[in-house]
Length: 103
Image (cartoon, rainbow, N blue to C red; front, top):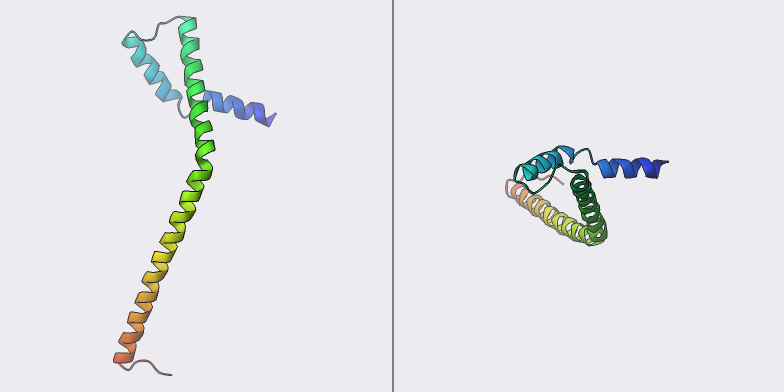
């Protein structure tokens, strides 16, 4: 079903494939990765587990991140509103001084 397809895409992680291919080639060149099935399987398992743990951590921290973003949005809204109120008052004063304000 959909979960299986999502799991397959997550395991394959097509965005990261070029990075891991480059990394595998570089580590093999340095002698850190051997060209044997157990070594390749261990490498693929490690990258899969690492990616899963990274996304799992992001998921756990998402509530904290969302809360911080809400607080940031609140204060940016206050700052922007204050700027517009100040500009409006300044424009009103200019119009009163120049007697362009007609009631």
